Every structure is written in C-alpha cells, then in structure tokens.
Image (cartoon, rainbow, N blue to C red; front, side, top):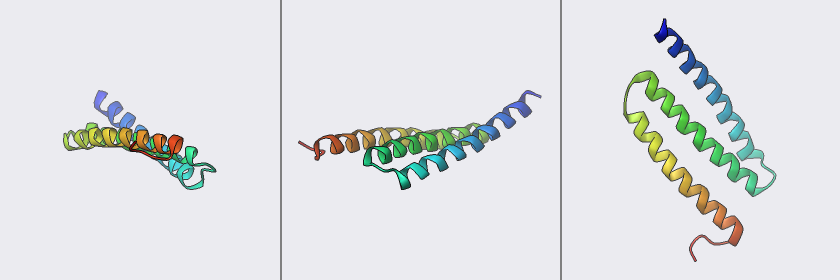
Length: 93
C-alpha cells in the first residue's frame, strides 16, 4: 500500500514537473526581455534537476542523482554568469 502511494506520488510529480518544464521553455522562447529568458532558463534547469531526482527515486539508480548534482552546479554558475553579463556587459573583469 505504501509502495503504491509512493509510485503514484512520484508519477504525479513527474507529470507536474513536465508541465513546469514546458512553461519554462515557453518563457525562454517568448520572453519579451533578456531577464525573463534568464529567469526561464533558471527555472528550466531546476525543474530538469528535480525530474532527474524523481527518476532516481523511481528506479533506485544513483546515476540520476549524480547527474542532478552536476546540473545544479552548472546551472547556478550559468545563471550567475548571465546575470553578471546583463548587468555589466562583461563576465570577466
């Protein structure tokens, strides 16, 4: 009974995360300003990371957790670099 509830919760989370990824992709493609596109990209990588975590819970494989960690680290660095570029026009001073 508990395993069935966990499986249903993970499936529901994956469906909702898929919808969130589509919303973030829409914001990336149609954002009126560059700041909106950066925010959409930030949301996109967080949702992709959470999707990998749910796949890891569902399958029990650690590869998904490692990939989620790498996405989180690279996504954060990318967001900081894009924000700095939008504020100052250059990344490296």
